[in-house]
Image (spheres, rainbow, N blue to C red):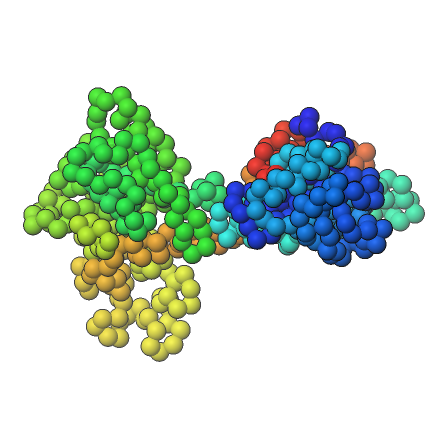
Length: 534
């Protein structure tokens, strides 16, 4: 981070630099006086009003480089805390580079490094470290969840909660200082009450944040949907169906996909990484085995796991490879063959833990379809549209009826959802033959069906609006743990000096959360993600 330590004026294009655009914004910061830049503009800089747009030529030695708008943000009231000038120019990439070169070669400016504008904002206390991390998340979000949380940390409710927690800590610390300096004036009982009330408020706030760090969210930051199975099971066909174009090579030759292939797939505001993996089988081919190892590694970390089984090439030893993995979907392919049912009956699928089972055919790759499949093994579907025992929402059929005609325990009509199944495919409570909810059509296009359930799982896992940044989660848990220990020891700490020391230890972790102090390794990690001009 040595390049962040100088105070030289910097310049960068803050808008896209990969293609031509109608307008580009060029930022300059760190210059001492606006008038020092007069030689580059036709408009008199003495007449410039802060935060107002002024039309000007950008020029040098009588040569006009462009005509655009300038906006000046004076020191102390700008993004970086320094003097900032923003130029809106025509967005041809050649034009942008020519203007950048003009200020670099004929002025005292140098090209900014990625994230350097934001680093100066942090250094000049215009942003806290946690806000910088929120901005990083906002700029690099691949889902609406990350986008909203980035804004939330930058200037929204989560940032306000952090500030409220810090304010509660300051009051707690003040209560300790009062007990040290003014206990005789205020009285021991009153000072103790003041301290206890302050701590209770602080603990309530940190407990609320702690609940948002529970559970593993690593798969939510860059959620992956992984397809695994044997060679020629139909992984690449399903991959192409979900993408709606032929991205993976599909052939009858086993082992066509020797390494994983990935593409971004957009589902209801979230970008998922769809991964087609190498067929998993015993092989003496070194390269193929590397692809298989990679497939298993991706499977271990994936957000949504789909196992595709070719029943004609499956045996118990093969299924044992997956006994420790919780799958979201088990697809048994080649269902279009005439002897499919008898072949499936010979396979013990109880070795596989999964939330849903279906048979499928991918012969028509534009309209791959699935149908319910009855097998022995798992307890039954756990997805929200497949008949939970307890309702997930008001309209999902409670055990206790809300009105005369809604979901009784005992059926009023022959076909209204009894607890004990009337039909073979109605999802029993006891393990045994399983199948979809009776509302599930007997045949359905696989692409919208799968996407709906992927989105359902994502919504379920993000229902409590989890805090996604790993550093924030770690520090919040550390503060909570220290607070619990502190709460347990409050009555045993008769020495006020020890009490004060314990509160200060709590404060160190809190300032780390908000970012009042910032270790260099944390800064390096954050600013590595920033683009130039931000």
